[in-house]
Length: 234
Image 1 (spheres, rainbow, N blue to C red):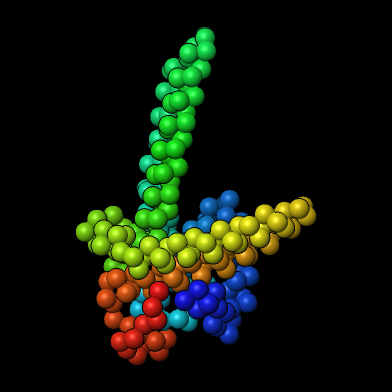
Image 2: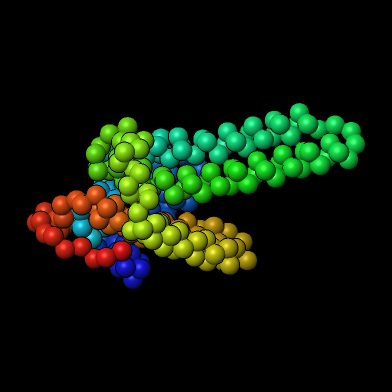
């Protein structure tokens, strides 16, 4: 399945155009709107792969793409706020505990360490939940579905989703390491990393989409809308 995920972005005659556009949008992600458009593209990846469609989507129908992206971005932001709040509260407690003497320093250090570890754990949990939450939105079309615990819990606790997420995480991490190595040449790592990163996250969401479809037992169809029953194992 790893090989299938890595070749997925190239399963189109216009894959170079798609990767170039995705890489440019990723590179310009600090402007927010490009990030929203990439999020919309990933929704399309999920929506297709959860039904067994292994033809990657294109960047077109920009209004619809932006609408999906805004909703996906809002879902991710909502889950990401929890670790951010923990960091803010920890900083506030550390500031309140600050004072003269070594004992105060130990208290501040303990509060900072504890809060940092908690924020890290919550951040990883959010990173684990967000793809599934966005997948549920992609399936049902309602932003509320991104927070539907009854839909999410069975998938999140399944070995199928856990394996797909971990595999995707390794792919994205590998792309990050490539970008880090290229950073020895000024600017090169940033530019190339954006394109490699977009490619990697597309491959990762391919895995998530298939896992979501397997866990939910969704009807399969090919790129021409024909239905079937077989799906490659994750």
